[in-house]
Each structure stands twice: as C-alpha cells, then as structure tokens.
Length: 349
Image 1 (cartoon, rainbow, N blue to C red):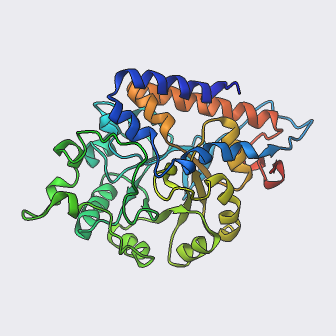
Image 2 (cartoon, helix red, strand yellow):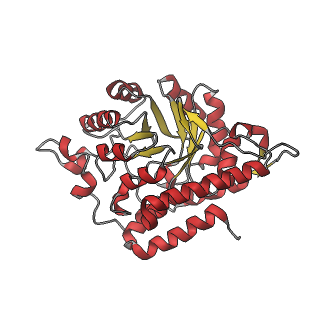
Image 3 (cartoon, one colour):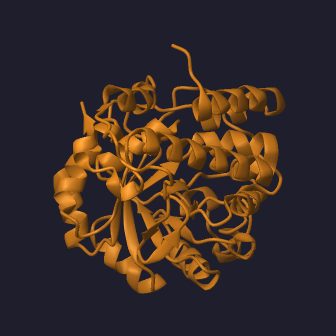
C-alpha cells in the first residue's frame, strides 16, 4: 500500500536513522515486547476507521488551536514521553524541547539531560512523566525539580509495574551509564544499587495519584489506560486526565490497540477530564480519527525519535510542522473548520 505525507516522511527518517545509529539503539527505540503484536496493531488499528465528511462547509480557514488543563496550545499534536533521547542525539531532550516550540512535550523520568536544562530549553509548555520508583524518594525529588523547572503537570505511567521482555535482543551499551542516570544520580543513597533503586515499583497503586499530586503540587494524569473501569477508578482517585496508551507496544503484548480503546475511555470519563491518546499515530488522518473518537490531544512517539536522530531540534520542528499541515489539510477535506468540529459522528468503524 503506498504511503504519503507524514507517514512517508517518518519512514524516510527511520531509514536514515538506521544508517547513523548503532543497531542496538535502533532496535531499542523501534522494538516492542513479546511477538510485537501490539506494536503492529497500534498502527494498523487506526486504518480500521472510516470518515464521514461534511460537504459545503466553509473551510477557507482551519483552526488547530486548542487548550489542555488551561494551557493554550497551537495544535492538539504533542510529543510523547520517551526515555534516553541522548542515545539519539547529543542534546537529547533539550533539542526536542527547542524543536517543539509552542507544542506540548512530555519529558521522561529517564531523560538524559538535566531536568533544569530541559526546562530552560522549553519555549512552550511541558509535562513530566513519572514512574513510581522502588526508592520512592527518587521520584519525589525528580517531580519536585520538574515543577521548579516549569513543568505544569505530572504524567504517571501506570502500565509498567516492571519492564516487559522485549522481542529484539539488542540492548544499547549506554543504558545504566552515568549519562543515562544524570537526573537520578544526585539523589541516590551512597549504599544504593542504582539499577534496583531506579526500577519501577510493582507496588504502585491508585493512592499514588494523590500522593504525587501532593508532593509535586501539580495535577497528575495517568498514562496507560485501556479500560473504562480503570478510567473511572483513576479519575475517582484524583487524576486530572488520562492517556490511552499501550506503551507503544512495549509492555503487555496483545494488549488492545489504543485506537480501539479510545472511545470506551472517553465515554467513561464523561467529560470530567481530558483524554489523550498515543500509539501508532503516523498521519494527519490518524490524528483526525483520534479527535473524532474524543481525544483532546494526540501524542506522537517514534516519528519524533527518528526526526531527532537525523536532524536534531530542526528535525523535530520540521516533523511537527508537517504534522500540523497535514492535520489542517484533512480537517478541511472532512468539512471541519476547527478541531472541535471533529465530532464523534465524523467517524465510523
């Protein structure tokens, strides 16, 4: 099947990245868990939907601007949290923040640049992604540093009690090095095993939503929600928003595709909080479909990794510009002058 636009650009960037990165790094970012069923289905699930465009609607201008948690954004397209971006480019997360401009970015717990440097590089809003670590004092310290550096929300990843076994054997040699532990290092106890102390804590639970909000002073969203009942449990426990995600196909293999779980979670949320989505988003049509299914924001992951690897901050900026341009184009074709016009009746499965 031929591809065009942002999807074609992503494929080209991925191929270019393969020529400049060591194979283990490529496999780390490209791969999934198990047999990579969820990895593949996260992409193909968006293709199961069809659009029902409106005709004779004035789309001489198409407006992408929106807001999330009271923050104005130029577009509903944002950058998903992704660990170890320094393996892709020397300036890592700081380059991503520079390239993102006014777009929302979510910075990983496992960032490879100091949180304060990332915050200083930001020209737009950013959130901090948090894991509950085995040594809980570590994530308290990082969340508080993020808040002080300008993060406006915490995104608690809930689908990773521990890291799933990956399908591809390669493991970058740099993982666990001082460069990848830069934010944890100042807070590790002298007698601590760094690998153990920074692991995800399998005892994490719903009570940690309110706990993280209390220690950080920031609203907390929960990422990794794929069920209606979990959506309500998280919101009732104090979550300020939800992210429908299967962790890019990197955790439980055969987990349902986010594209297929999105409407269920949106309906369960009932307008009480914004619902975002990630997983397999590769085109403006995917973003349009997600908006019609009720998403308030759409996170892009691997495409920006390849853009960072091949072009640094400029590469990220160019990718986001292409994403916005394609979204505006397909919104107009669908008869939607604003993203708010992409209502549920626009999409059919």
